[in-house]
Image (cartoon, rainbow, N blue to C red; front, side, top):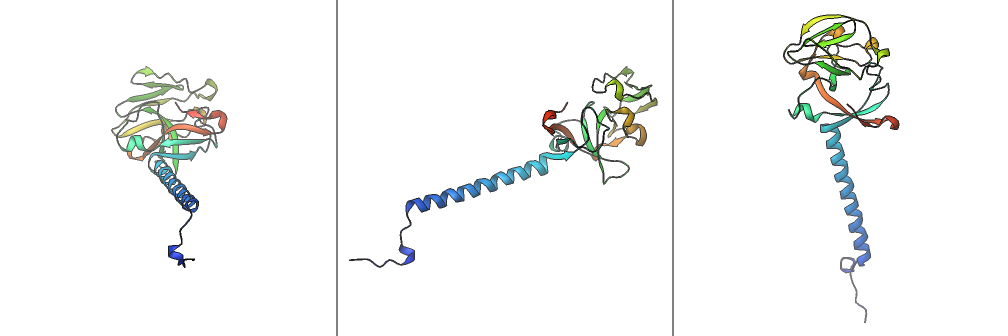
Amino acid sequence: MLEDLSPAETPVPSSSRSSLWSALSWVRDLAFSVLIAVILIVFIYQPVKVEGTSMMPTLTDQERIFINKFTYHLGLGDIERGDTVVFWFPLDPTKSYIKRVIGIPGDVVRIEAGQVIVNGRPLEEEYVPEEYRDRVSWEPHRIPPNQFFVLGDHRNSSSDSRTWGFVNRDAIYGKAVFSYWPPQKMGRLH
């Protein structure tokens, strides 16, 4: 004798249930991964493209890097001399610039024929090759509170604090931490 089973009572083979559960698990894991990636990119690390040559040889035109937006905003790290920072350009806040911090609040910075002097001591700048140096002088300035003096590593082709002044702390929104393109330059930034 055959039983008449309605569709709701028809048993689903265990292999079908297993495939359905596997597919749902995969979708759940994918959604979770996308969520984590979005959180990382929006709140912690942001990919950016370098435009221009003012940071050569450290960073080259069209190089792709990650910036850390988390450290400075939550007070987990102070902006230090030597950091490569990304900030809103003081003369046009719709544009971002990337430069190296040379002077921090309270420092006295001057430049004599291209040699940067901070608080009376010549600054060692192994990241600026001789061919990228200039011979420009800049009179002594004390860096005001919440302001930073920034320079490009390619001194003879950089628009920086020597031209347009200091960068306000609130305008700095990231620190360059990692280069990922081109592959031969992949690695942590110093």
